Length: 128
Image 1 (cartoon, one colour):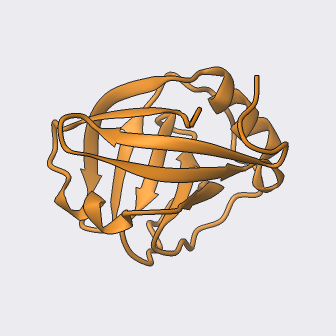
Image 2 (spheres, helix red, strand yellow):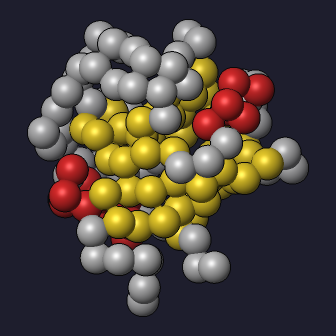
């Protein structure tokens, strides 16, 4: 089973019926959390919005904070343990909660600004 390289895993975040965004999880940022998420793939659920800075996908993933931080940049992907949520940052942000940095959105980050509550996210490994 190959996900690109050992340290970088290529993913697709699909907004069902709208568009696809490429992402990259980086194992060195949070090895336990990234491993847990990859083993849970594919993930699917409703998109949620947190202000105008973050959109996220709630998952059944259980993992604590790992190298937690509270400042994020546009395009960052982070994990919020309290809700098992994978968060996608639309702009530089300090959300007030510590999260685990997982990786980066590598294309089409601005497409996420068009996400509406109730849109369906599908997150899966990029096999192409």
